[in-house]
Every structure is written in C-alpha cells, then in structure tokens.
Image (cartoon, rainbow, N blue to C red):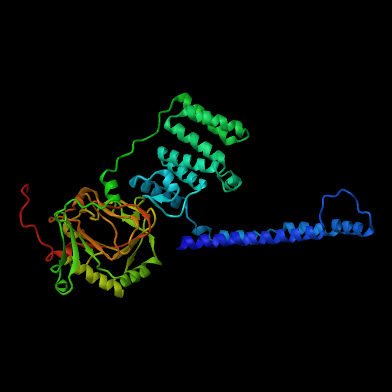
Length: 478
C-alpha cells in the first residue's frame, strides 16, 4: 500500500506542477491577447501606440523577465526529495525483474504476451511501455540471461519505433533510442553474433555521428572480434516437475482420500475437520475451511503494519536476507486473542505440543514473490542432538486465495497445493529417527496475479516425546 500512496503523492506533485505552468501560460496568453499581438514590422503612426510600445519595452518586459524567472518547481522538487529515501532501490528493481523472469520461465509465458499483460491466456488490463521493456532487458543482460534479454529488448524496440510521437518523452526520461542500439550490440556480442552487431552499430553511428557512447561500443566490439571471445550463452536447466506442478495441481497418489478427522484431538470428536490426505510417507495433509474470514482479517491486521523483509538461517545458523525468498513477514505474539485460537487449532490438527515452538510467522508474497526450494528442518548441529530441538512439523495456513500462481510444491513428491483461503497444509519434516527427510524439500511457486498470504508455525520435536508415534521396527541396515 505504501508504494501506491507514494506514486499518488508523486503524481499529485506533477499535477500541481502542470497546473502552475498552465497558470503561467494562461497569464502570458492573456497578455498577448490584450496586446493584440501580430507580426507587424511597421512603427506606430500615432502617439498613443507609440507610448504603449515605449512603455512595454521599458516596464512590462522587465516584469516579464522576473515572472519567467520564478520557477514553480523549486518547492515541488523539495517535496519529491523528502520521500526519496523511501523509494524502491536498485535491489528492488533487480528482484522485481528476477520475479518476472521466473514467472516467464516457470509458466512458459511468451514475452510479447507478458508485455501486453496476458498471463496464461487471461488479459489483465495492463501493459508495459518501451522504457519498461528496456529496463527488464538491461537487468537480464546484467544477469547474463542473454536470450531472454534479447527477447525483451526486441519487443521494446518495436514498440518504441511504433510510438515515435513519444520519443522526446522517452529521451527525457533517460531512455533514448540509442540505448536500445547499444544494448542490442552488447547482447549480440555476448551471443557471439558479432557481424550482426557490427552492422547495426555502424548504421547507428551514421545516424548519430556525435554519440560518443557508440564510438566506445565500436571500439569494444572490434576488440571482441580481434581476440575472438567465445559466446557467453549458458544452457538453461530444464525445470521438469517444478514447471509442471506449478502450473497444474499435482496429486501423484490417486488412492489417497478425504475424510472428517475426529481422532487428532478430543475436541475433533465434537467438531471434526475436513482433511485431505496427500501423502502417507512423508505425512502430508491438507485441512479445508479451518479458519474463518473474520479471523483471517484479524491476523492480517496484526501483521500488515510491521512487515519486514523475511530472513532465513544461513550455514552459520544466523538469520540473513535470502535472495531466493522475495517475501515480507512478521512474527506475531500468541497472546493476542485470535492467535490463541490459532494455537489451539494447530494443536487440534496435529495433536502435538506447541511448547518450545516458534511463534507464528505471517508472510506476504507480492506479485512475482517466490521462495526457492528449501527444507524447513535445520539439521543436527555439531553439538549433541539432545541439546537441539529441530523443526519436526510445519503447519501452513493460507490467508488468501491467489488467482494465478503461488502453489506450494514438493518436487521430490511430485505434489503441489494451490492456496485456498482458510485451508491449512501440514507436513512432517523429520522421520521417526528425528532426522531431516529430504523428500520434504518444497518451494513457493511465483505469484503471477494477486497476493499470497500465509501463516506458518514450526513445531519443535522435543516436547513431542510422548505424543508422536515411535518407529516400531528397527532399520534393517542398523
């Protein structure tokens, strides 16, 4: 919401600027009309007109100089600078571009359709302009994703040439046509198509002979041709199951079933919950319609004013920002009334003891938001297993529907679950020995349209000593 309010703020400033400029234009036009301005080279032939001319040249134009020197934008510029620290950073732009790239690759979306705002055959009443296509292409080039960069640049250049009326505007905003040429040459150089790049560059140099940047690009390209650098293109790794199960809901085991769960806790005998069994080993279940709209609204209200960039544990077991997790979150104190109900609900669904577990974490994945494949268990540290309580179970409650994208996927299980508001996905991260089950590696597929809200609870293993069923048979390899 802050981004929208900032944009409205800036647009209002530009509107105020145009209003003030229009006032100046109106004042000048009124003066011209009053002077009955005409292209006339003849001196006045009567004393009245002669006096008026002398007076204007002596007094009026000094005042006009003062009037024109009054710049209406000084105060407006100060207003813009006041919120500059709150504006998106270079990192934000790079992450947004990466999100679009991931969406395009995972869901196999054509570039020209994305530019037109078409996702999976649905038009969403939006589109990109040539400048925005150039920004995406430039960032993809920096990431050495040359094929996609060329696609985006080509579409943007076609739009630019079809919109020549706005060329001055694009140039004023820092994206002249020559920028497209220079980036095209760099991409073709990286792809090894240097003869094509040289032809395009020399044509551009004839068009813009005074453009110094083209001369520098020409020198770099000649050097690349001279030393014969190899193409820098890298092979794309096929996504396979990930791509398929992010697009379509995967249910590999058709023999599993749905039921009313009346046994996980005593309370469920009176109020059973709708449960869908997704996997027996590892154990994964989906509860339907377990959280009300009222409680969801209350949870979001508690979280949304203090969301911060989510962090994950790095190999040193310290929290740090993860570039493969573009989400914001907040830990919520469970003393809140609604959170106390959520704790009781989680105990009823899992029949586990929540003592010693982490707080609930509410997370928001905006458009393009995703979380790379990862495990929820932390693994046994160097010290004794008995001194460390790992994340045995994950409970994830979906707080929103997502129109397109946003599925939770388990690639090893060929299983995916699309968000449905009010449902809860639960799975075991540890096997019966308390070791991390690598089959539970999971990911949040990119959100195409909408906003993905989830609330997660990681339940620790030590308090479950008398609750979790133990392994009844010894491992035959022990």
